[in-house]
Length: 123
Length: 251
Length: 128
Ligand code: SF4
Ligand code: FES
Image (cartoon, rainbow over all chains, first blue to last red; front, side, top):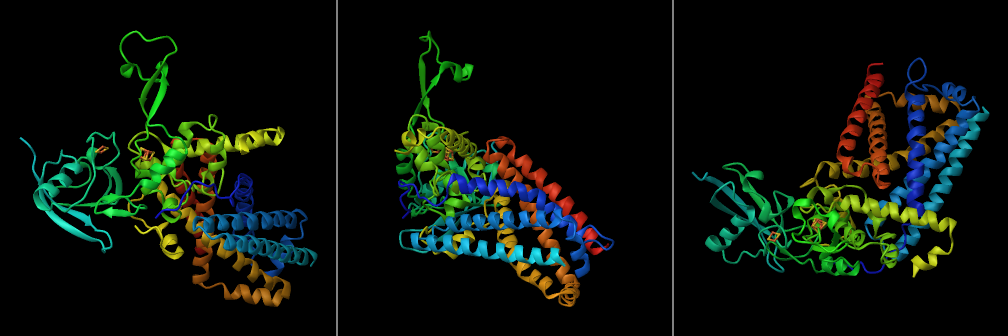
């Protein structure tokens, strides 16, 4: 039988959804720049060597832009993935676990990515 | 002269507790008949155990919803010509996402219960101006009088069957129910805000718009869900600047 | 028709192509690319760790990615970004009630633009 739909289920809120939309719009611009820079610019098309990468990240606004890209793409993808999982009706405990796992995952990869950015920009 | 076609109709057959199988019946048909006519003839002339539902035969009761060649249709208004060619095979199956009671009949009790829950009314009142001129009631009308008319949604369940999210998430309220909530009016019942602004409400929709594609009755559930989203966001923005509002909306 | 199936069965229903309309395919494309891109994002971040190990490690790694197989993989990521992003624009618009009755045409337009962009990137990647 189909479950009752009488009680509203928490877990997806306007604010999370709005964040997904806003980050999505930002990504539209940043992902395009990211793709073009990596695959289109330069004599051979994109950043082909380690020194290409280091040189590219010398300009101050590049690491700044990539940092924003990193944070928005992590946020967008994890909220999105959580939304997909919500479609599968996880139990209360499972959802709680996913919430925390995703926060840890997002933070972890965010910090790791920023660390990587700082290292490259510093070389 | 009446055109005559010969086609094969594949009926989905399943009785409680049994595995489904297809039953093929060769039929002489008039391409201008509707699919429901074939189903009725198959029952009358070939197999009296075939179970199906219908009532009005003119797209008003919503009982004859089924999948014709996988696509959700009201069998009573689906001309044979529009779904098969002479000599071809036509597949008739029950709606998806609802439990099968028998053959082509599914249990839509949950849908009706939810429609009740959101306060969907089978009759609507409309201002005279809102009714297309040719359908306006004759005779002198009271100024500003409301007219009663059948609501657009006939609760046929086609949209619920076509929705890919409802297929994986039975507790998602679903297109018909959200459209019903929209039609009932959030303004009149603030409780509805709470119901639809949730993980099983408007945020569960992922914009497949299958509901709108199959709806036989101009309800346009996809559009109504988006309208609900707009209203919820609008309400959220308002409450941001006017913190007294949540108490009214919340409870 | 059993709504009580386990989550793997239910997840596969999203991608059941039977009886789908055009915008239903949009949903499928959006979801597939979402899953693919999320997987790629984390893979990408992990692999970029090579950058921290200095020029030799990174350049050796880049050499190993010069095979056509990698390039096809790369192009599919680019393709997924375009399809997901352009379809995303349609979803954002309609979610705010903009152009909902035109969503089908917008979808077609978005996919056409996406395909053109994919072809341009593909030519650039494979032909130079
Ligand atoms: S919204 Fe349309 S498809 Fe859905 S139940 Fe109502 S009439 Fe049928
Ligand atoms: S029989 Fe009433 S809608 Fe088809």
